[in-house]
Image (cartoon, rainbow, N blue to C red; front, side, top):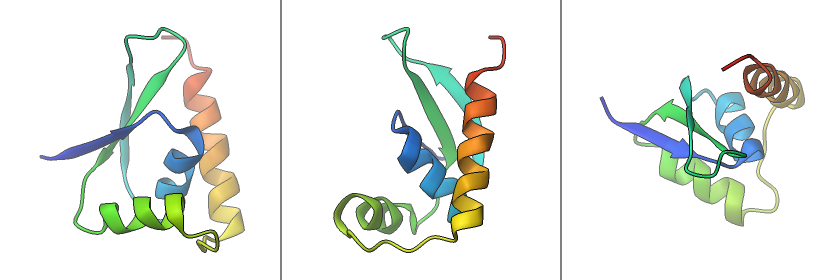
Length: 79
């Protein structure tokens, strides 16, 4: 199955809030960074562009805050 990875914390939170399925975290070559790995799907490119280039990208605030908490929790788990 195809995957999509990003090291951007807030893009990762945005994608989770928009319904993408996070399937894991991978260590990058830089030991201070992690890759957030998602199941890829056809609308992903549109969502990434919306996040990066549309200064009015819409997301449910509660979903976004929940996604931020989820990612922080995963980052602070023992490796």
